[in-house]
Length: 218
Ligand code: DX5
Ligand code: ZN
Image (cartoon, rainbow, N blue to C red; front, side):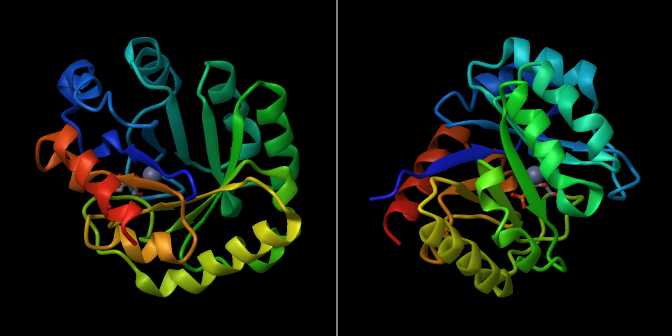
C-alpha cells in the first residue's frame, strides 16, 4: 500500500495557545502551516518570524503552504528557516522551476500548489522538478469550506504523470478533508492529506487516527 500522510492544518488551531495546539497533534506526519498575505488570498495569517518560532517548538516538522504573492522572492526564506517542505502557488510564481530549485538547494522539499481554476497541463511535464504537488480542493484562504470532488480528475492527471515518470512525488490535497471525503481523494491518487477543521473540532489525536483509518480503507 502507498504510504499515506496526515498533515493537520494549524489554521484551525487556537493561535494564542499554539505550543499546546502543536503538542496535541504530535501523532501527525507533518504540521501544515498556512501563510497568507491578504493579497494572493483575502486573509492574513503569519510570516517568517512566527513560522520560525513554530518550527522551534513543534515536535513534528513543518509543511509550509505559502498563499502569498511573489513566491520567487519570498519562498526561499521559509526553506532557510528550516521548514521540511515549502509549497508555493503556481499562480504566484514567475518561474516555478527556479523557485523549486532554490527550495531544494536550501534543503527543503519543493511543492507546487494549484488553485481549483488552474489546469494541471503546464505542470505535468515539470513533475521531476517537484517533490510534492498540492491540488487545492477549496478556494484557498479559509478553513471550514466544502470539499470539491470535481478536482479529482486533476488529481488523477498528476497520478498518471507520476506513474509515467516513475517518480515518488507526493500528491497532496487541502480543503474540506474529513473522514467522509478523504477516501475520495485517496482513490484518485492523493497520498498526503491536509485537514484543519476536521482535526481541531474534536480531540486531535483521535481525529488524526480516524482520518488515517478512513484513508487506508479507501
Ligand atoms: C485553506 C488552507 C487550508 C485550511 C484547510 O486555504 O490552505 O490548509 O486550513 O482547512 P479545512 O481542512 O478546514 O478545509
Ligand atoms: Zn493549506
